[in-house]
Length: 210
Image (cartoon, rainbow, N blue to C red; front, side, top):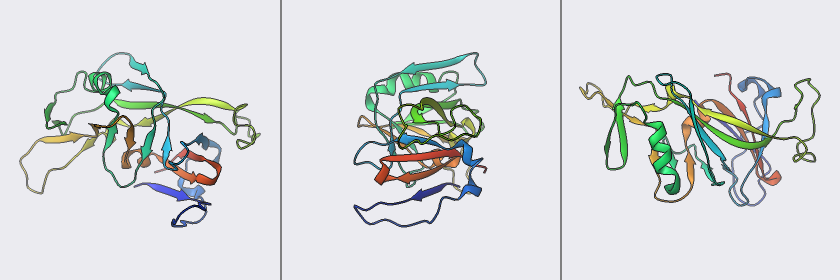
C-alpha cells in the first residue's frame, strides 16, 4: 500500500485527497520537511546511498553529486541514474546470485536483498526530540539535518511470475536508467507517507504505520 497527499497546487489541475491522514503515519512528530526541485513537485535530491546486506559484514556507502529523484506512484520499479549505475549495482548485487537480461536483473525469489538507504537533506521540526516544534518554513536552514530514507530489502523483489509458473526467478526492484536522474516508484511509498506541498516548494515525509 502507499499513501500520498497533495495540497495547495495553484498552477495546474490536481486531485484534493483531503487533509493529511495522521493515523497513517508512525507519529506526527516523525515528519521531516524536504525541499523539492523547482518545477518537479514530486521530487527530492539524494546526496548519498548506502547498503546494509544481512549476508555481508559492514555497511557500504558512497557519496554523489546531487541528482534529482522523481517520485512516481505509477511505477513499480526504481531507476538509477546513468552516471551512478556502475557503483550502485556493484554494491547492490554484491553476494547476490543474479542474472541480467536486457538491463533487468533477476534473482531467485527467496533472495534476501540489502536494505538501500538514501541520504537526503531536510528540516527536522523537533530537532531536540523534546516535543518543542520549530517552524520549518521560516527556519529551514537553522534546523537543517541529514536523514536516511530506507528501501527495505524485503520490498526489493518483484514477483512477476504468472500463476502456476515453474519459474524461480524474480525481478530486482532497481533498474538502470538511460537518463541521468533517479526515479523512486511505489516501493518508496510503501514505508513512507508523503505530503506534497508544491506551493511551499517542499514535501513532508514520515514513516507509515503499515
